[in-house]
Image 1 (cartoon, rainbow, N blue to C red):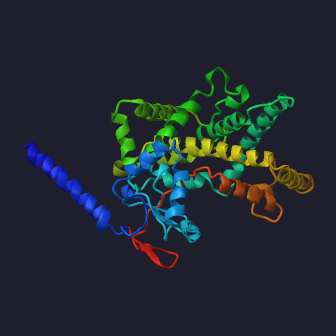
Image 2 (image 1 turned 180 degrees about the horizontal axis):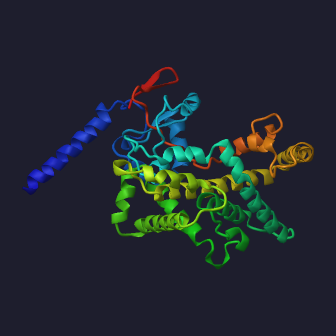
Image 3 (image 1 turned 90 degrees about the vertical axis):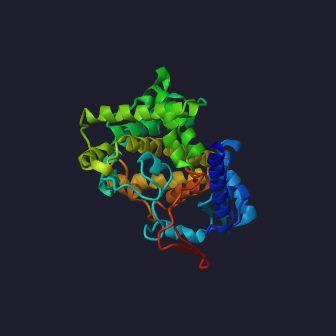
Length: 377
């Protein structure tokens, strides 16, 4: 009986390997040999490089070209011709990495979640403008903290982290965490450490999404980090359900949509809380830190940017007195904010908040890259 069992497993494994290496539709795509056999190759490389697979993949692209096979069904593409396609849902399918894990849908078959349209309502132009007074309040608190240093050296990276977490807490859950005011003292920053532990787990195994669901049943530090953050998000969701903030927050629309999430399409709000917590705080803080680091190392760029922003605010007193932040800055992409927009875009290019990129599903009809290569789902 045991012999039959092992024979079956060996035969199955052999057939899978033969298909992936010699018969798969992307078999001719260049890349490391072991990447063709299993997605665990990426997980191993993430672990080996200390979560710096994006740097390792850059070296591989220099060796193999713009299109690189990094898994049985996965291609890493750095061809600039693909950029216009990414904004067209019909040409490239849904994103499938962190958001997929957070809101709990299968890669190949997205769940029809009523909360999806609610996320769209959270980030309309009108909704974003409604968030400005709250964000300005925390910006003032940040400036107050900096002023108190009186020119002494300070850890601005921590302050940016505290700022974005307070903003996220207010906009997502209706209440700030008070971290910026206390500067993380008395354990106020404990949940930041909890979230960072979670993101380390996600960064390690995000290329194998099914394993993240298995983690909750496994002992060890990885599952502990995952469970801690999940419990924290569940706690925040329950607290948010118990009160109604004065101004609509992100969860205002998500809670409105929750009664529609029934039957096979039901998804709890913990995934939304995870997504809001990570995307609304950590990535934003890293963007601030990276841009200000670049500005500190280039006084000429800093001075030119300061002149542009000063001119905008000076003009505000005559044309836009009722706004905390000038409308031209809120809207962006204008001749008046050309340099500010360029600084932000260049900062994101040099130090992207998600350096590993965002995965996409190839649409059923396939997609052609550079006019010569067609890929099908």
